[in-house]
Length: 525
Image (cartoon, rainbow, N blue to C red):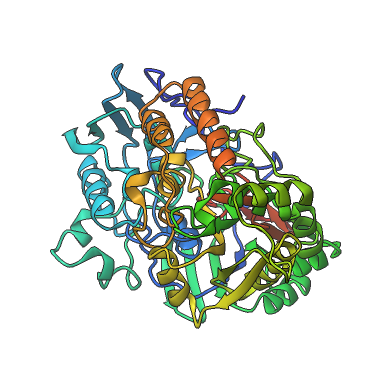
């Protein structure tokens, strides 16, 4: 069985040879320039203060994290060569690699780890990641001890990928705001396998090998050119004609299926488990209107045909998702109410809820929102599906993403098609959607107004439980309750795919996709 926290409760973690994420066992070649892409412009290269997959790709190359993960969700050494957790779970000790340096030659020390934790706590949008970390002790240059207010199993995943970038105190400790620091995008001094050559927004991010990287012989590539190509069709053409070697997070079904037909390309959905991207229909459970009634929400779920969404709209590029935890997570519980299409059940529930059909066959009206163009087919389908059971749905388009986000954040909606990421551990990306203390705190908070005391209790316990099996049981009960009360109708995983040329060796197919270091990727002859 996969365990997110394998090794957490053990006294000492591995100090062995690094097992990397999803890498094939073929003979690597050193050198060459990898041409890849970013699907949108980049606001910030400093992943200690900025979330998101576009920052994550360059950020994970420029900055090292203490840990990295293999494809089985097992933590592996990286900047921390080993670690230990106290018996009470309140101290996590990181033993840093000796001789590691930043790109300007300054040594990476425990003081930089302490500084990075503080910057992340104060500036990163995912506040839950390091919330229990009260202080960091630095008994020597290569030892950092994180002192916790409570056991915090999510900490291990939070110390990997793009979530815990180790940044230099001697650069960012100058009193300037880390979010807007002038060295975030120019003359970046990182700790990772590649260093910045040039960043031109709208054009490219260019990185080159850092020869002083602390892992001997790494990275294999000489250079990475990340072309910024916003148009998916243009990215597809570049992949087809060999201009681009690899692209991650491709999500348009028509293009994915088109690229699968190209002999020189591999197209795979592997590698996104920790990103945990999900599509769902959000319902305003806190409303005084119809969606505040659990029977109405259940009826809506029974009236929507997942098979149509998966096969007609998404063209077979997605997998089913029955809960708010991604199916690739070891905490996913598949044994919940799945709401297979059943119009008779839907009509019966609406009758029981007291919403009889009028002379026109309609029971009541609702609005449905969406925040990006690719969601329009979904909301149009939901409108047609709910009409069959007497719910008159009006599609409400937003002028732009901020308008939609404001509506969600202030709970000014009935229904909305949404996409949300798990971000590794449920504490980081799942709890925020369901705990009652987070109702209406902005977009991607508990915008459904959902409140259940037992769910609050389960999530609080799961967030402190270091035993993986006990944690799994807590999350299982949580998922069953939410499935029964349906504040959200879970549709599917997002169709993220990685597309790479047959010239690419060791593509990033672990749990973090390209939000992980690609120091072992290489170009074949």
